[in-house]
Image 1 (cartoon, rainbow, N blue to C red):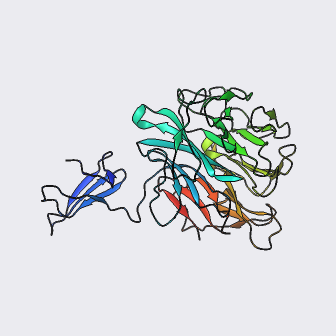
Image 2 (image 1 turned 30 degrees about the vertical axis):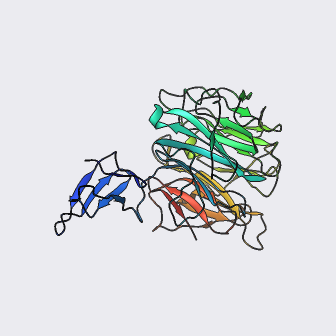
Length: 394
């Protein structure tokens, strides 16, 4: 019998083991891909099961985002198999989600000037992996599905996807392997942008655009093509000044190393217009003029071996959070990468002039996938320990 108890979820999938307590035959542990299900009254005609997962987590997080300071939720979490979630309390299991069925969460974003509006995207595993998107106007308490999907969202529902919200009811959605589209009516209709089609770099290898909306000027939206993989095309940055409807190439963003979507990132400083940070997997770049010019920061560099791809990537994720009191730069900058041959999470309080390691050798989490930084509390970041759920610092 597969244990199931209404209200605590299904415990099917990836069955690993069943353990019976030798001193109490009514105590049985069912180990599965989502954790441990436990009963202490197995001989009952209707045994009760509950998740015994405190301190354990095996979710694969695809995207993390934080809202502005003072918002009544603290984190947006998009994860494989369990979908998109809104965290209001980091110490308890989240309850706010648009689709509590078996789904993959790809990304989420909020309208910075109206943070109760949230948009999320993903794929419905229960429906043969068809793409799906949802919006909430009340901070995740209630949700509606987008009435339509942009071109490519249903037919290529890969995880190399992104969404940027410019204002309530307005979003730009970049499905995997597809040209991004924008909506000005809450997903009732979608219109393709003029961004180039991304050429395939190999069967079954997805690629997509990273999107980021400028938080001070929502008419500006940035799009980054990471090149697909280490053998792909050079990375490119595009800038929109009409809320993501049309884009122009940033001619100054040259020399970007091609890498996979998952080993690169694009973020904006929410406190300053036109302040953009990019990690291309190999190095870290910074623009203070909306991509007209870019500075490559020399601190980060990949560790190379005998292969043409890095043994350890130089800069894979960047996030900006609340600044240190009295700091010379308006945000704390966090980067996952390599400085002086040492991999870790690094923080800068002076806009990248100097860096200090934020973690240590005892806290490497089996690698880090994605990262976000808190806008309320200096020194708090959220990260995905690959396959280990979401971790956060104090």
